[in-house]
Length: 456
Image (cartoon, rainbow, N blue to C red):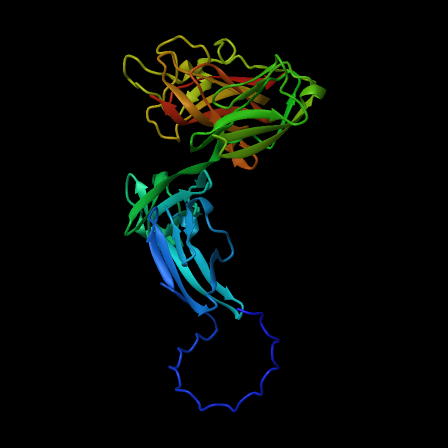
């Protein structure tokens, strides 16, 4: 073959030919759109410890991104699973998981979100806060609030353990129990019980009803004695629990080695010193630290010109038998009479003591001192056979016709008696010739042996 020739020039374009046959129409493309969100439930209730499952379905073009979050909190990461398809799973659901959850979908055209709520049911969990440890008898009290953690709301009931609530005096409101006009029988344990369809729980609190201390024997508001006298002041109180008695001196201590307070509340001070022992003394009655009562006495000690010494009623040569009389005496006409003159201190004749014919508080033992004297101390003692007066009053007279009951703080003074010899100083000396002892209370029988101290 020979060599190729020179390429010729481009030809002229010809006319357009007839149209060919149309091809088949293609499918329409998908339009773009904003996200649309649908949740499986607007409210889900799950029992505690079970699994909560929520599904969030979304649509949109381009395909949206899906995310779950908790409103006002965070998802429990160690118990939560979230899938890209919109599935939210919370394992071992707890009470604190209850709340609102949000599903959100986003693409380039926008976003949309939907909320759903999760409720967690559980059996009640009950607790009682601390309340007052006691209430005073006759007062009203509201026991501590019964706090309950659970869902659904429980029924709350109160019970006394053991025993029953007194319906006429109890009110239950907002989980609290109130008791009106508390009685001693209201003391004890109280149980708050909460229950729902999943179970019940209870808690217990204790209530003590106390009776405030009340003085049955009070010291005088003022006691004026001389340095030659001894102080003997009783102080007794009642209450529930039974109060204990103690004495305090304002600005100092009770005189060391010269004072003592017995278990029955009697304060004794001897070898008085004017400056050191004068002052304010307080008798304190306390009931197990629940409550206290106070009775105050101002003691004034002066140098007395005379001495407070025994009249010596116990000596028959000083006070004759005929000068000791009584309203009556036991054993009248019998072989073992308790004559009035047997009522001398330390008397050993007969039964060793005076006893009245009856136990009436109008019975008395009378001492005629022969003339007016200033009485400063009275003393009593049991009969030899352990029959004795536990409390008594005294009356004075100068003429044997007009009598006055001894008073302190404008009230008739009731003195305490004991088996052993017990002295009581008068807050002020009394001028009189006749002294009567009136038994008020007694052990076995109201018998007495007495002594009188006068200023000499």
